Image (tube, rainbow, N blue to C red):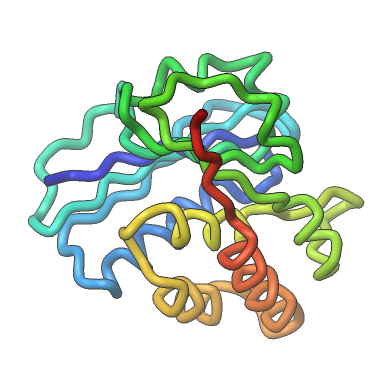
Length: 188
């Protein structure tokens, strides 16, 4: 069975890199069908950006755009005002939001909501670019917590390979903190 993931973020947040790292971690974990696909045009820093993954135990033969995903990851919650995020999530899907206010989201009970304060984590670990927090690695920690696609160890190995030595320890600490700090909101 194929698991489809859509990442919503803004240009400069590392959405495309996060999707690539998830694909590599899934392959390390034993999945033999993995894709990471960016969907953007001539966007500038701050514009909405989408990336996606398909992850399967078997090779993947479809490369069409994902219409409705099993898992949607939102790096910037202000995108709910600009993009139809819930319209891209299956009725019984998993939604992971970078927020420190889970109570503000009123969702159908069939959607499994996970939240993490990735901005706070990035700030605590000094993961910043041009004054803005880099939340892609903390959001990968949240994906590991909310899904059974990859382990935190798989992701740590990929982060070690992809991130420069200058920021490696901060990124690994942020990955672990996000994994530990991701919570699922219970309905009712």
